[in-house]
Length: 179
Image (cartoon, rainbow, N blue to C red):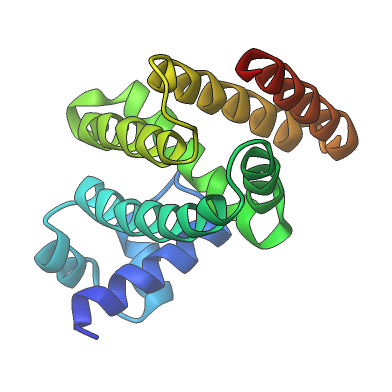
């Protein structure tokens, strides 16, 4: 593993513990055993460091989810996706992805590419798990929006039972559509 990869992974651990809202390179560097100057050397800027870390997070999450969802196609795939996303070990990563999305919306000059790449890559993951049809992309877009909304609701309220029931209801609506 290169020094850059090691710093990326340590930065991710820091992001998971502290979030990004008040990220400053000096405290980050101190916590991960380097200097702000070396972070700039390896990543060019704070924004680029965040983008590199989050690209890695997204890539790892999508690979794991793709494998799981392909094994459980259709309705079971959506429910498996929901269980994976809301699992205690994974929700921290999801929270971080949402935080970076908000940063990208607030500062598109620095993070706009992340926002574009994230939306299109998650759409591709969802599309692979939906049967071929003329409406496949539209259905994948709807599924992504429903998951995003329910995850935000779950993270805000902690009401797993209600949000899971809503997901199951949505899945039942999807299955009626495909009949």
